[in-house]
Image (cartoon, rainbow, N blue to C red):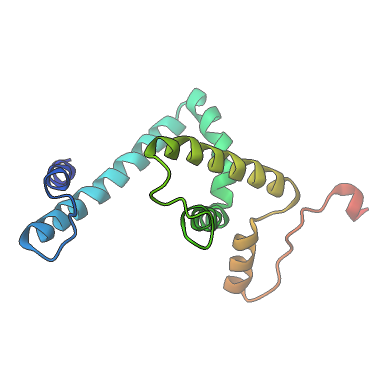
Length: 151
């Protein structure tokens, strides 16, 4: 927490924190010291919530996104590039920050819907499937076999 507080204070004071100055180095060190324990705290909070039945029901709704994490990450990258850069809609700097949360919710909701529908028919996400085949060095079935199809 002290690293995060120091970094936040320096970021407010300096604006651009990752500069090649003594202050920039201190800000980088504060960020580095603060980021790992914060990630561990988030993971611990998730595990503690998962251990309780009520929150587990809610959190388990996000399982399709986790099963297709690489596909979703790459999808978010392509969506972001298409929205914010010049070869897409070029919205960077032209869209207010107040739109960030609703936009993220729409993108995440769309990805959740896609992942849920995809995983109803296939064992793995598309990128995860390719990654598995490259890792194992052999073809792996993608489609979920139904009882009617195997009879």
